[in-house]
Length: 121
Image 1 (cartoon, rainbow, N blue to C red):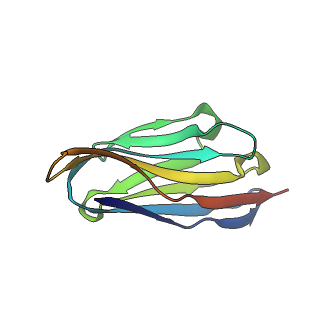
Image 2: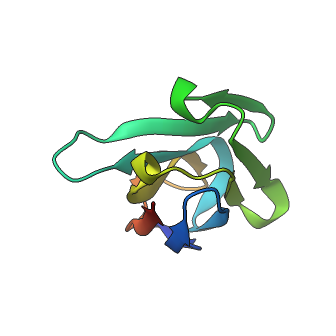
Image 3: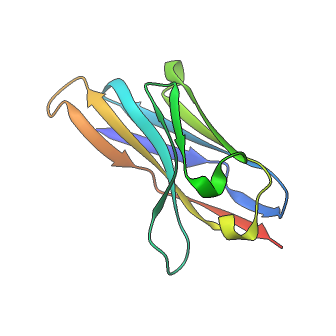
């Protein structure tokens, strides 16, 4: 019922920037929380940043001051601006959304397919 489509990953040198986008579509009434998570090889998936009700933000300590999450509520889209990238930021980045649907089952938590971010040293 809901699709999350991510874009914007790629290869960048250390110190560079990338901007990720995630667009949600489907039977959406409203979005409670959207966020970005990442998973590096051999590691567990971890929180990067979340935005609640399109305004209140939360960041992992490792990305504070370098990454910025924002949302365009009209487009059901969340962005992650990543600056001053480091090799340790290399991972597959996943979008997540906690949604209110306009039909049964009325709640949904969905994941995107993931986008690779590789930072070379």
